[in-house]
Structure formats: C-alpha cells, structure tokens
Amino acid sequence: MATTEANNRARLVFSLFDADGNGYIEPADFELMGGRVAAAVPAAGEEAKNRLLSAFQRYWQTLVTELDANGDGRISPEEFTATVLNPQRFDATVSEFAEALAALGDPDGDGRVTRPDFLALMTAIGFEQANIEALFDAFGPDGDDRVAVRTWADGIRDYYRPEKSGIPGDHLTAGAAG
Ligand SMILES: [Ca+2]
Ligand SMILES: [Ca+2]
Image 1 (tube, rainbow, N blue to C red):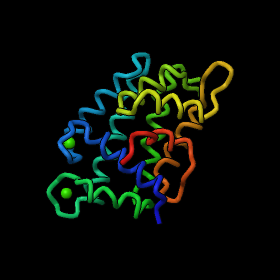
Image 2: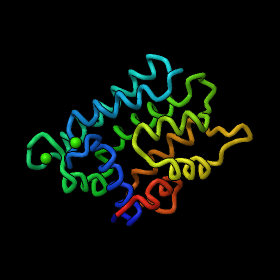
Image 3: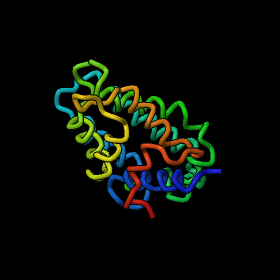
C-alpha cells in the first residue's frame, strides 16, 4: 500500500519529468531536463555532469522497460502509477540518480551542498522555490547553511518509498499536488 503522500510525490515527479508538458514522459523530456540540470551548477566538473546525464538515461531506460505497458514508447500518467506499486524495480535506478544529483551539488567535494546550489539544481528539475527552501530547511542545514550530500541522497531515496509519509520530501508537494 502506498501512502497518499507517496502518490502525491509520484504525481509531482511525473508532472516535472514531463518536461515539455505534452502529457507523456518520453526521451525528449530527459534530454531537456538533463541539459537544464547539468547546466545548473556552473562550477560542477564534467565528470559529475556526465554521471548525472547517464543517470537520467538509465532512469528513462528503466521507465520504458518496466512501465510501458502498451508499448508505445512513452509513459502515460496511468503507466507511471506503477512506480509506487513496484518500488523494488526502481531502487537501483533511483539510488544512482540520487547519488549523481546530490554529488552535482557539491562541486568542491567537501561533502556538503550549499543552499544556492541546492536551489539551482532543484529549480532546474522544476520544483517551486518555496517548496525547495522548505525541503532544505527540513534537512537541517549546518551553521554555514549547507546540508550533507549523504542527507540529500537519502532524502531522494525516501521520496520514492511508497510506505513513507511525513518525510522532508513531502515539503515538495505542498501546494503542488492534486
Ligand atoms: Ca513529454
Ligand atoms: Ca506507454
């Protein structure tokens, strides 16, 4: 059973990953979003950017392999709902994406992500600023207003857990779900 919060989180992911807004997730959406996210932190190295781009590619491959029930080469909102029904099929892909995204937010490699870099990356994915700020605060930033790369990556994994509610990631759907 997926919680209401988990379904809201999945709906939000679908709407953002449908980057061109045509109602389906397709390879073009991942190209669009990949380009945006890779450019969000100018100080990030090529290796980190390429890692993120390949994580996005794997994400698409997993979606089309696991969810394209009618075989039309694109993922409809109805097909996407299976992500919360069969989370184990996505664990490895989500984890790779989580690590790659969080690492991109740490260009100087100190294991911490600053608020401006966090904001830039999450805005590139398509989240709203107020939601992003609330999430960052929920992660418990340190005295220099940074959160651990590990905390963020774990937060992304939690976001995709269908049994979870009341997690920091639920700040992202506030006012956006429905
Ligand atoms: Ca689309
Ligand atoms: Ca389909």
